[in-house]
Structures are given as structure tokens and as C-alpha cells.
Amino acid sequence: MKDKDTFISCLSQKQLLELDACTQCGECLKRCPVQDVTGDPSVSPPEKIRMFREFIKATDGLKSTLFGPSEIDRKLLEDFTKAVFECTTCGGCGRACPAGIFTERLWPMLRKEMVRRGLGPIGPQANTPGAIERTGNPYEKPTAERYSPWFPAEVRVAEKADIAYYAGCTGAYLAQPMVRGDVRVLSAIGEQFTMLPPEEEVCCGFPLFITGQHDMLKNLVNRLVKAYVDRGVKMLLCSCPCCVNIMVKDWPSLYGKPLPFKIRHLSQYVEDALKKGKLHIKKGLKERIIYHDPCYLSRGVGIIAEPRFILSQIPGIQLLEFERHGLDSRCCGAGGAARKVFHENAVAMGRLTIDEAVARKADKLILSCPACYEKVNEAMQGHDKQIKIVDIMELLSELI
Ligand code: SF4
Ligand code: SF4
Image 1 (cartoon, protein in one colour):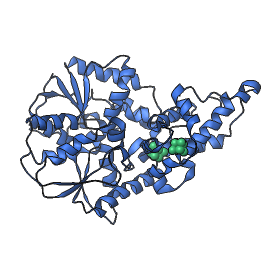
Image 2 (image 1 turned 90 degrees about the vertical axis):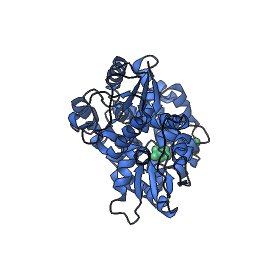
Image 3 (image 1 turned 30 degrees about the horizontal axis):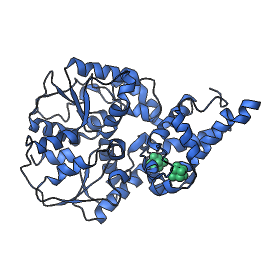
Image 4 (image 1 turned 180 degrees about the horizontal axis):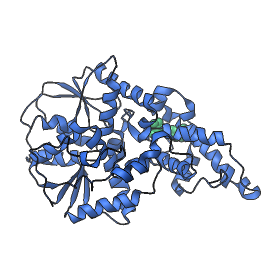
């Protein structure tokens, strides 16, 4: 790949227009968690857009058409690559953008372009395809241990069923209280559900998509879809916001046609079960709790009311809100696979979430994302403020 080659092959026409639409107004800076903890303008949304426009001008602009493309300084390209991979892809900037730039999708496509040019991904992110190839998960953890350390002995899984549960790699390996809570709640609802055997429940593709490494995506999606179809599945449930995001938004195009089953986030299914009287909360909790909206759940797929409804059904509970919540939620630092490389940023962002929860005098911080769960727990280690962190289904499973 030459630095003079086109920069626009990974972008849609809409995204090219979006790049042009940026007025450099800086509104997005107020919503960027990376800016909050680094204050580094070179990793800011307008600067990334400005630099990428320069690359396009050098290789695809009028001057380059008339006189040939110009060489781009290698250091500039490397700095840009670092900036675009330091982002948590939380989409907060897009939410604030008066020009309506859909950054949640733009940044991953700019990452894809830098991977195509051999400049990205960075650090351990580059090991992800190999790890998934060898073990089915991006953490290179043993396949045989995908379920065994956390799956409750009393929960029964059917060979075939209309409903399937996908645990996801981050939950299964790094946030086990969360997935244990998921299956306990599912079991209490009482409808039969199936799961794939550990060697078949491979990665959903999100870590590859988000780090711009798209080569294996179709294969993973086809394997998973076929395995669920073979089990007669009509509805696939999952609690991980990142998995649900790629399942809803990208699996159909990767599969090449509409999916043969519905995708539902677990909170949607549980809300429904509570409303229909299939699930009963037996114990109350006299506590102040605060719920953090994961970016990929709230901004990503619009699931905001469902977790709040579930929590509101717990007798005695007082539900608090972060200043920025719902569609305006502030990223806890775990997103976009940036936590694998920019660890200190991620810890600092996680601590901002902890600090606000403590300042609001919450007894518990409720999460609903395995990446948030892992990283915010890590951010608490050695921090001067402490709060009990609980996943929403983990909490619910103790009260039903
Ligand atoms: S997606 Fe989030 S982290 Fe990335 S630039 Fe936008 S606000 Fe900042
Ligand atoms: S808010 Fe939108 S238009 Fe303004 S600088 Fe950020 S990306 Fe550009």
C-alpha cells in the first residue's frame, strides 16, 4: 500500500459528505471522554476530520487529479492512526454535532482505512484475528472454559428451542457475575432456551469490526447464524451491548440477507416478562442506585427505558441518574477496544463515572455491559472513592 493511494475506498458517499460538513465548531469536544481525561486536541474529533480531509485532498482532490497524487508524510499518517484508535467510539461527539455527523460509524470506517494501509490496528489489537482463529474469542482464553467457571448447575439449557442465549466473549471470560445473572433470570422466566456448545459460540465479530479488521467477519457471522438455525432458533437474546449492536446493524449485510431470527437485548425480554407476570421480584432493596447507560446500548440501539423499567420494579429502590444519561451518557472508558492500548485513559474515564456515582451518594453503581463491568471494576482498584458495582441482571437474579 502506497501512501499516495486513495483514502476514500472504505467510506460511503454519506460519510464523504459528513467529512465535508464539519465546520470545526468544537461542540463535540464538550462530550468527548478522551478530551475529558487527556485534553489533547490532536485526538479531538475536528482534528481527526481535518487531517483526514487533507489526506483525501492529497490523493483524490482536483489538484491530485490534474497533477497526480502527492506523498503524505508518514509521521502524519502514524499520528492520525494513533488518534483514531485512541477514541472509544462512544459516539458522544456525533450526538453533540450540529452538522449531524454520525461519528459512531465514521470512526470505525477511518480505522478500517488505516488497517487497509497497514498502519493500524495498534498494539495488542493486532492479535485479535489470530486469537479468534485459535480459540473463538479475542482474549485467547481456553474454549473449554467459556461457560464452565460460571454456569450455574441448577440452570437447564435445551438442545433446541425457539429462544437462544448468546453469552458473548467479554461476559463469559471477564464479567462472569453478569452472564451468571443473565441465565439465572432467563431460567426464572421459565421459557426453554438453548445455547451453542462452547466451541460453536464464537466471537460475534465486534472486536474485529471496531478495530478495522474486517476479513473474518462474514465467516464468523455465517457460522453463528447457521448454528442457531440448526437449533430452530426464532429469537436470539444477548446482554452485551457491543454484540447486540453488531448483530442488529451489521449481521444482516454480512450474512447477505435478513437474519432468519429476531435479535433482542436481554433487558427487552426481561421487561416483557415482568409486564406479562412471567417474572416476579420477590425481595426488595432499600438502597439508592445509579444506572450507567452503556454507549452502545443507549446511543447505539436506543435501549434506555427497558433497564430503568426493570430497576423501577424492585420494591424500595431509589433510582438516581448521572448528569449525562440516556442518549447523552458519558462513556466509562471501556469502548472501542481502546482500553487494550490506552489503559490509563480508560482507568481515568472509569474513575469519572465512579466519582459521580459516589458524589450522588449512590449505594450501588448498576452497569449493563461486560466491558464497562470489567474496566470500571479495574478503575476502582487503588482509587480513593469506592462503590459497589453490580450488573443489572446480577442484581435482579438475587431478588427473584
Ligand atoms: S466517539 Fe467518543 S471518544 Fe471518540 S471522539 Fe467521539 S466523543 Fe471522543
Ligand atoms: S461538532 Fe460536528 S461540526 Fe462541530 S467540530 Fe465536532 S464534528 Fe465538526
